[in-house]
Length: 391
Image: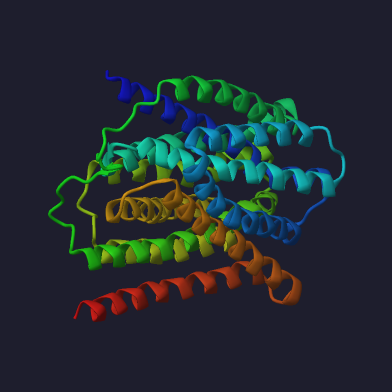
């Protein structure tokens, strides 16, 4: 194993640890606010929208910060901010303080993800970098969501602060070690290596796929973050404890992981509009089913479709972004900022619907589903525009 491979392996370790810690905290934050501060679906959606708004702007600026001051400077600042915020969060006893510290932790996280995306892809083959990167974070993400509820039932809600805090300390030490062994790219070497792909179209068409994926990915996160925010309500509807909710409602995360493996090994999906459009249609259908069903087996089956759709849309977004241009932290910041837009808009629409249309049953789920359908139409508009521009 070369020094560059060992270094990249260390970066993947950082990525996996960070994904685990982030999920333990953020995915179960809404259960915490429900059980400690009495937040209902509307207030959790408002919280999710606020966090998403901060994430949008902070990620964009974080990518630029990393490009200017260095990747490891950004990483260490991110880990330290998250560590301090998590430790403080475990000590507070008011909802306002808990929300403020969630925002601090969120800002720290924004410094980490764009930087990790740039580090793992530096000097690597684009397709391989995207594949391993996605599989790594998705694997620990699914594991954390699956066992998080059980950890809460055994150790209490404080574990969603102390466990990620311990992980941040490990990551800080690892970041200092990796910084000393970072390989230097040869002069003139590309930041990302692009291998020949017979399916790659001309530059204009490649850009159009990049734009379509960038449109679809925020809408995918509209669905994801809305789902996470109302999951305590969904679990209550099925009389599921946090532990059983983690077991039953994390299936889509494992399906997404499986999709990442498939898409990494099989490249036949590259630059195929039909596949991207079908995934988006499945996203809308499965999202609405998860939120509206009262039958447990239907909830579980819908998660399979949701995981498949999210897997292809997310993978497409990152792959087309890297394949159409050299990847760096600024591109990673744009990618994460687009995710932040979805994280904000979906819960905001859901919360507004519950506030202004309380007389309509399931108004939040229906409103977000209509919003997702709007994005579906947007895919075809971008596709049509790109075909006209080519002519």
